[in-house]
Image 1 (cartoon, rainbow, N blue to C red):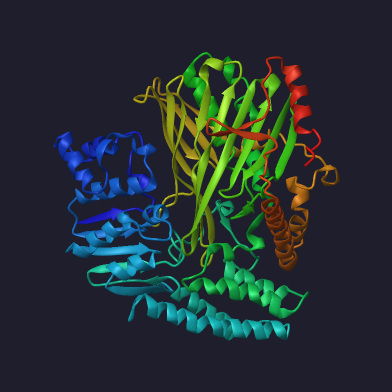
Image 2: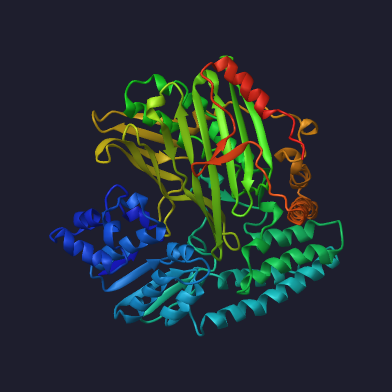
Length: 613
């Protein structure tokens, strides 16, 4: 009998139940004290066992999943990336959770087949390594160090052949490309053992030959960086072939830098390359959520709090489908950078949006939107934290969206959390961007809440971009449920009468998108996003990697110089449009009841000349 731990364990947990109630629903017959004692052995102690699972951290959810798995009394464990949230929480050093997991697996006398990107984890618990390549699984005679040595041996050969081809401006010999195929196969090495089998995916979760292209009709969920290649190394080699400017050595260094990722001391910050950038700043990317105002306009007129909450929820879920094809990362805003725009709606009303990078360490983006005549105010902040996981990158999206229906002041704020993002296949395999984990959306004044679960495609099956969630009132009474795919269609089913309706349809709603109006670059201030990054954007449009890298470096170096100057003069950076109040970054503007006066006040505030230093 086997037990399976999914790499995205939220698929197996009910976010609306507490850990104790979850175990009780799956394995009835014990007392609450027995369930709490069992959870305590996995680090879920005290009142944590009584909290709703949707509010737990990723590491705590992993512990609940392991606690449930152990009650199955399996003979064989199938562990798909079991360290994901344990190592994210522990950063680059193993934490107590990871150490405890390794100790438990070493002491257990059953069979284990595991998939992991964590070298220390594999080395500690595995007794055999296997390699998946060309549809075959073969035993690798050696440890992880020997496997990495094999990669180090072959890659310089590939680079020398590619470098020679570049020097002569010819295509690389077929032997070089054939060698790369072998290397790519070796990179999906499997750590196996008679007792503990470990599939080592340097690509991290969801990568490698088992995670091929998505089903037909889902091409937008994957990325081919170059017309011929499907991963970063191959895209760089392709770029080398196409380059006609500058000394070959300078271009070749990009490939050399990336290949050094095989060595353990590399930092992901050194791997970022401009050809995977989306040509706009994160401050502008946030405006995607202001593209479907019709979904929230008028919500304050709905008498039932359940329906008002559902309308706000539909607005929240409508912004995710607006993205470039494939895996693209917006520019990281620099301190003091701003983006501002306005919207003009068909009925003559207006909307205004302003965003500012209020902090660099840690990075925090604050934003504010208001449509005075439509009685809607939206504010929030993003505090992303990223971690390089071999062949994938996880971005933990801390922060929240806060929606305020100005003609329903008794409702207070609707607080909408943000899902985490996973970019997979960044070195080997097809690049895929997924939203994952559970995020809470709630309105405390009305007692409405929804634990929205962004499901990621499992290693053994499933679909991309799936969302599920149960809307509840008072924390326990189910009002309705949502399910579907954020890239296609989301449906709502009313639990009270069984009726179902379309909550959001991406293809139909796109036709009614309202586009923002932005001042021409020549009229913008130097620190406005589009003007600030204009050289980088132009280079990306021209597919000129060298110019893009130079433009990106120019902005970053300029910011470092400004930081050194402020430090030397003892000057503290002052935020222009936002200030920290009650622990939240809030716009420096008073809200007026008269919509006409509010429009005038916003326009004057947003486009006022910059303050003199």
